[in-house]
Image 1 (tube, rainbow, N blue to C red):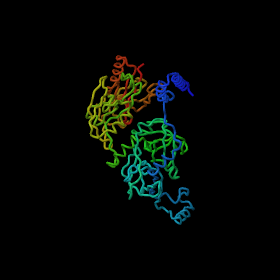
Image 2 (tube, rainbow, N blue to C red):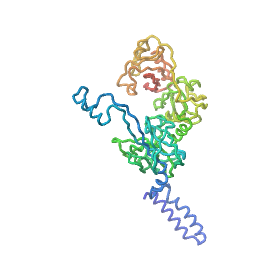
Image 3 (cartoon, helix red, strand yellow):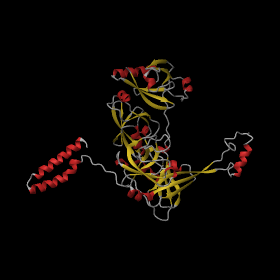
Image 4 (cartoon, rainbow, N blue to C red):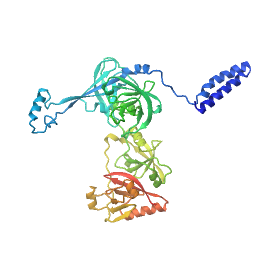
Length: 495
């Protein structure tokens, strides 16, 4: 019992003692009030306890959970009778005859894989992971209460690893509905169902260990759980205690391939939107802004004169919606469609979830002032970016600045770095390994195209930008660096 519990219980006891000392009628009235207040006095924070059993919930939702078996044709090997027998070996003919007698030879073979899924409508739509059915020739759905049905693929989304299938049934199927993963809290009970390790229908329970996990993709929003998830659980549902699907079990973190209590389910906030598009179009249709962006670090924020590191910093604006609206490299995106932008991940998800063709207001910080741009979003899946050419270079000059050995652009350097004929900027030819520039990842071959959010084509340009930053009281200078055509901002200290 904590000191807070002791204090609240003592307060409740004191109140009840005081009530007993009152006249009978007043005591009854106040006693009723005390009884109503007692839960609040003794329980400052009320949490839902674990049920005595999860059996009722499991029985309710099991009929909608399915096992998925896929069959894939694997091309025949053309490398000889066996990888264990060298070509020309005296045993080569023996092994070829042995394979032929066994019916193998060099014929294509069939391989099978197992996974899980769940039915989301009475007419037979089934959700699973894309990697469960990717490349499959045949897909068979097995139901909890018996029976199997072939399934066809309606659409897939590799970005979120979600696939939508359809089976044809003579009778309506049991199904489950999506819940709101955004209201789920760390510590809430969850139940995972699926076909782990091919053992058939299986149930495991645990809690939500963390939310909003990002593993590798731009649209990741994973729920982390300690409910046992193993191979074969992929594509199965993660339920809340109301029997609603709040996640699709997708991945585990494990050194040995088995569950160690760190599993990940793609949140229903993402899945439900993807499934709706796959159902309607057979593919996803995400909004496209048309910029390359990076997060704002503390040193970049200082170089920009910001009080806090937030927003999405534009590193490049190829031909597309943002360019047409007047956005420029170096702009800091503060809000998108009326909502603040905390970082690049949030912006990418918000843009992707916005309707194609919608015109949205994007507030950017440019040269210390806020500007509002009206951007009509394109479609990400069909977007083709093109990097605009820059101004021609001057005669090559070399200098050492900020721990960097820099050379002005020349035709020879353009050829060595496989750059376009009009590529411009300062080429990093060497980096002092004891410098801040080296620590922040700058290397020989990098090209600095901007400093202080202004283009640089000469050593003199860079020296002027450094002087401007020092005159403005800046402690660091923001550089736009390109490597292999990919841009990023780096802030280097001037002290």
